[in-house]
Amino acid sequence: MRDTQIQAAWYGLDTCEKCAIRHLVLFADLKREDFSAVHLPIEDLWLAPGTELYGQDQSAEAVFTIREGLVKLEQYLPDGGRRIVSLLGQGDVAGLEATLAPAHEHAAVALVPTKVCRIPKPVIDRLSPKLHRQLMTKWHDMVLRSHQCARELSTGSARQRVARLILLLGLPGAPTCRLFGRDDVGALLGITTETACRMISDFKRRKLVEEIAPNQFRRDVAALQAIADGQ
Image (cartoon, rainbow, N blue to C red):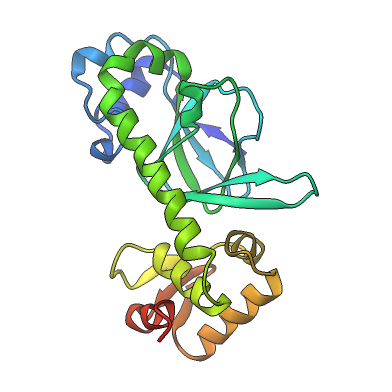
């Protein structure tokens, strides 16, 4: 369930200006006077795991900056299946197609507790010249992220794919990462849920990962990198 923490436009914009990750997000290049030109609320939303931010083919009325957490972009297939096409984390923008298209191309769903800022499309339209560089940067980031998912998470053995995913989900070199449901792991990697469970259980037995809290893992980065590289 969404918890709209910021309703008033001015309070929301004040929060944007002071945002701790502003250097990562869409408004990074804006100056104080630019915020005074915005007359719609920038909402701050908390999403529980499994909450849909927007649906595939839903009218595109806003873009969403991810402040914390992890969001999957997935497409629903004609046979009833689904395909996860990308993962978005802190500083990424979901729903960029709203700047050009009338509907969303994918569904966006929170994988872990996630905090986002909802930016109405009219705000983007009004500020478009000032946002141009950041919009282009975010589009480029999305393309790179999609290519990374295709290159690293859909090739190699199941063992390699799981190792690469665990490496991808944490900061480079950091000892911990947060994983998500095994069905989503399977859908992202193109393997069955059973195979995903088996691989992660095997990694636990071999002390490559240690679950220190629900879906929170301590990881052996060097050993996982060796597996990811096929060694």
